[in-house]
Amino acid sequence: MSIEELIDALFNTSNTFQDITVERIIFSMFFTFVISLFIYYIYKNTFKGVLYNKNFNVGLVLTSLITAMIIIPISSSISLSLGMVGALSIVRFRAAIKDPTDVIFTFWAIAVGITCGAALYIVALVATPIIGAIVYVMCKMDVLGREPYLLVVHYEKEVDEKVKSVLPRHKLRSRTVNASGIEIMLEVSMKRDHTDSVDHLLKIPGVKDAALVSYNGDYAS
Image 1 (cartoon, rainbow, N blue to C red):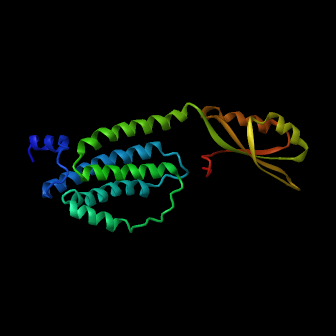
Image 2 (cartoon, one colour):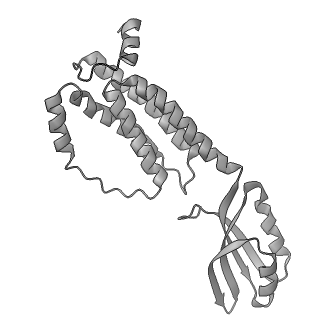
Image 3 (cartoon, rainbow, N blue to C red):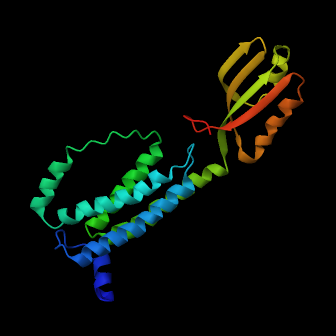
């Protein structure tokens, strides 16, 4: 493929149905792979869940490639496209995705596969960096703000009032009382560089320990 043909393939969006050639298949799959690697990078560097799952991230790349492989024959024939839509309508995916962000990244990977498989490379080339920049900036903005944490404190019953008086602004999640003392779990919000402010709890006689755990609303890490 010459430079002129490469440029024409990138910027030509007028042909809806195109012939299937080896060059087109290789170029579509390669272009899909390159752009999906960008999604891989953005997901890895903006992940804020409990445990980063590399397999899921690799699955995003494979999702783009497989989607492109499906779209290539669909974009070559209108009759095949109608038949493929009917065949794919019976497919059901049962995998549970608890983080809404993972659903967004999955849909993004599918969109890249569709645009590249349909030879609309300029759409993927322009839209992907824009989406990536927006996702990266919005995720990194939280670093400057306040983040949610779970604060777990064990202390003796006699110092209950003293502990309550020095606790930061919080939402009570649980309170357990037994013969050995009291355990409370609170949801607090604070800046990441101010987390050492809970150390003053240990200065209260009768406080056994205090643990601050990162919290994302569903899981603790």
